[in-house]
Image (cartoon, rainbow, N blue to C red; front, side):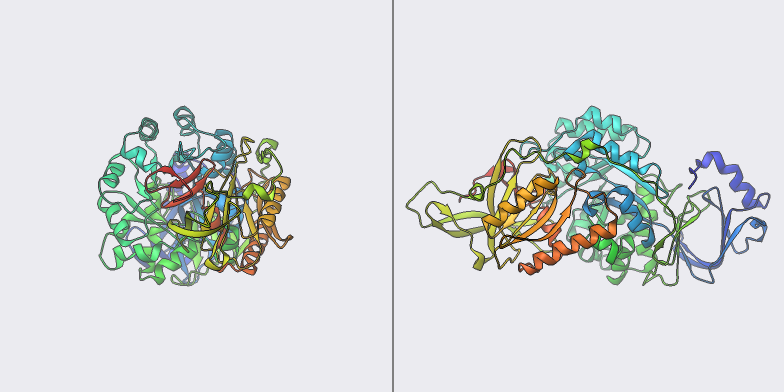
Amino acid sequence: MSQLKSLNDCRQDLVDVAMGREFADTVIRNGTWVNVYSGELIQNTDISIKAGRFAFIGPDSKHTIGKNTKVIEANGKYLVPGFCDAHMHIESGMVTITEFSRAVIPHGTTTMFVDPHEIANVLGLPGIKLMHDETLNLPINVYVQVPSCVPSAPGLETSGASLDVNEISEALNWPNVCGLGEVMNFPGVANNDRKMVDEISATWAVNKTIGGHYASTDLGLNFHGYVAGGPQDDHEGTRKEDAVARVRQGMKAMLRLGSAWYDVASQVKAITEDGLDSRNFILCTDDSHSGTLIEEGHMNRVIKHAISQGLKPITAIQMGTINTAQHFKMEYELGSISPGRRADMIITTSLSDLPIETVLARGQVVAENGILKEKLPKFTYPKFARSTINMKKRIDLHDFDIKIKNSNKKSAKVRTIGVVENQAPTKLLISELKVEGKIVEMDRAKDICQISLIERHHSTGKIVNGFVSGFGYKVDCAVASTIAHDSHHMIVVGTEKKDMALAANKLNEIGGGLVVFSKGKLLALLELPIAGLMSDKVAEVVAKKANLIVSAMETCGCQLNNAIMQHSLLALAVIPEIRISDLGIIDVTKFKHVDLFV
């Protein structure tokens, strides 16, 4: 696909096509125009495309058709703007940007705003630059938000790298950078932390968008201080009142439907029940693993879900197109079928069911009936991005022993991470567990197993042990992952320490990934050699292996929806209530370390 010209460089050509002085490259005839500006469905519409942009949209395009013009007959089908994902992490798909794009283009996604926060925590600015450069030659629009919080919780965790204000300012001027990534350090913003103030000011100075992340139910002074600090959107709301509060304060409420986050249904009631203006609401995915992309879809899945919750189809489509483009100050490039905009669009027979029949990106047919038609350029990640597992030693089962100081005690009260299905937050639970020979024991009958975080960036040999509840494992087993938001150490969860050691050592051997062991046997393995986060295989292969991981977890007794996602967030020290890090157990409601023992 040829490089897209800027609007100024081809504006005269667009005018000439609209006036009939020059012929279009492509014309779509007799469709129903889904106009996201007026909210209308306009029948008998023709669309003429030149130089990858919309030139003429009207009832009769004869004057734009020449002998070399490609004509597509829409036969009354709906002509919908290409979908935009307003906030997402490519790494959650466990594939590269190129492979993620290959998976989502057939679903109608033509624009993504990505925050490479995960690779940044492993590789720093060089990792972000790799992902940025990978976006440049793709046939769809992929914009990068510069990660704002690396590490995400300073003082509570140790990441593989860190970013300072100078590095962020440098990256803000790269060609495909659209703004600052989600500002997770909400206490820092509310308290005028110098680093947060400087990052937000640097983004404001170049007129780019400041992403938000207010992961608290407190809508009091801390929330008001955060909004006053500059973040312009937020995707962490889970309740109707969260969406209402954000919109009233001038933020964009981003409602997400990822592989494990189901936050649309509760918050969309702010529109359907309270009548708030839908143009201040945006749809996004945040985190979608490859299995979801292949089997269920991407933004088309989110928009269909929003419609099923009571939104008019045109409203849901606006929330996944023009609202996003306007928020990122790109409405004259993206988000609508209007003259001058990039010719990104979908042809479909139904707005409610949204079968994605034809996808055009920059005027070219890139997918038809679920099949990608465009060959994507290959991008190779260098060696430094593939050598990121730096554990000090081979793990032994006794590394997971949790000892109690008082040898006379027969039981101990411990803080336990409580998993909440389909939600990013966790619950702080207090569990009373048996003590055998100074070792605190797990309790499978109470669904309390062990969690261990193994430092994997700086070869410190640090291992932090704790307890987690909610996975429902019923047999001897262990699940290990080097996807562990946000610092991405290695997390091992298990009911049997021998299996936990096998799982940890296996991931060390292969350079990162996910693995499930049970009773000494390997049940499933997904290799993620790029930063321990991404595979270099095609999305279908990764999805198949990811599904095998999920199936293996189910075999061990876990019935959680998308339990991989729940596992990967157990160290996310910016979302309440309790997490584990390489520095200990973290109470995220207070942003401080706490003792495992009560």
